[in-house]
Image (cartoon, rainbow, N blue to C red):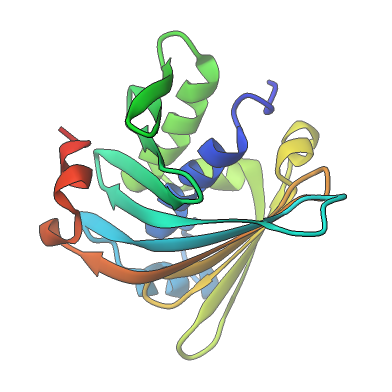
Length: 210
């Protein structure tokens, strides 16, 4: 399977955000089990993100920021407000991208097998089936009294060309994700101002789940 289409940079970060915010892979005992118990799993989780992407050969990183929401059984809304207004919505059946209010991309699970793969991983993890993530990544967890970190390294050579390593850190919530792509590009995403519950989503964000 080719991963270049599955792991379009922004789509991959959204998918990864969803499965990591809720469902780091669980094991029967040990460090990963304690991490899994630490992470909160609300029905709705929203907050702000700041992203820095460093491209090989470019001196200045690309910066973006905005808001995100993750709703169990409904999907993700990833709304970048800077430097441009763009939104990606991921549900069980499709991925939709909007730019300044206009739909610029729509991929359905019926027409694109790669989307089926992404959604199968995301929603199986939300449902509590953690095996798919360990199928794709080697997992190395570590934990202190109040914080944890998980290192993920791609098992498959095809996947490594798109996404080689991922480092995830946090406490009750995921606070930092660092992604190393196969070509040397790096992305860091920092999450803040996290709120949970129905009131966490703005009116526009809540409407995107309807």
